Length: 374
Image (cartoon, rainbow, N blue to C red; front, side, top):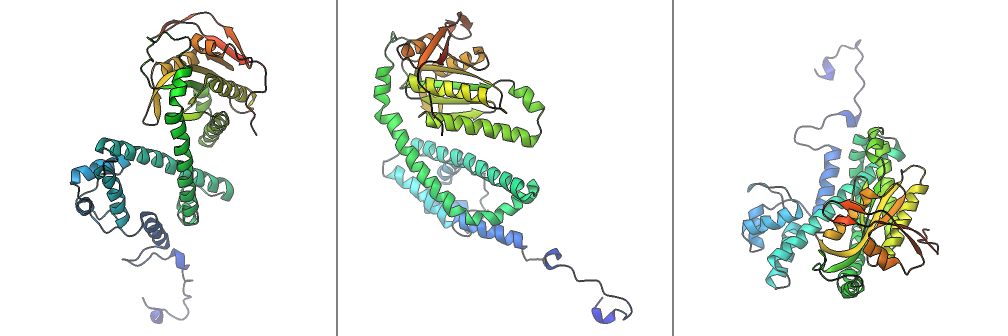
């Protein structure tokens, strides 16, 4: 009914607010427009290309292109889906050119690509959740509202986050080259003392101190906590571990719920980190105590993780440790016994699955201050 046909004595309804009016068919809401603009900025342009066009542009079969896309973690895309941009084409050309120039084999290219895909996927999830959590806390909005609002907040952060990513990658690559190439031989040489040469880990290429820290009673605690409190506990645990391990010159390999796996280049560095972790959780007014164990031995480093008997023994020792204590094995104790920063207390022998009888040693603080955290 038009306004002209409304009887004069009948008041007209107040007009709806502009943002309450549904957009006409064929037009996008402001939210969709913002999301589309963000996508084009992140992807480098509008989606115009189909998968066969991108593969052909790189001179690849569709099968070969799909191997690389799957390594990056991309979902399956149909032949008629217009899903790619010119930046996707350039990225595919970049990795293919490295193979054609003989700088990477196809297998190495896929492995390197998978590393990029998996690490950036985890990083993005972490960053998005951190931004959402901050908006919920600071703005008092609900989680769904915060996730929608993030679309308008991200454009002002993209360039800075990208710059920090590249900066961090270069620093980490330099540190990794030093650890995994330049100093690898020295680490193996220092691990020779006390070994017969026929140990299970003898063929493995890297010598490292491998440690685990496991929160006590985490499962029962998590059942009594709401979602927000549990998230805060997990974040506090991870942040504290990351800080201590970093200050100690080690590397945090991964966290799995209530447990953290870390490595260091020398037995002493591993011991300092282990004692600092144990003390930090003992002193923390929120987190429970931790069981900690550390073993000096040889490992295999692959896919961003570490493998070998040394890792397995450290995990077994963690289960044997009392809350608020650090255990090492007898060979690790022998590597530390001349260092007056540490006190070593032998414990009764234990029969450990897969290792037979082992001789745990409790590691305690000796002289010195240990790790100093700012």
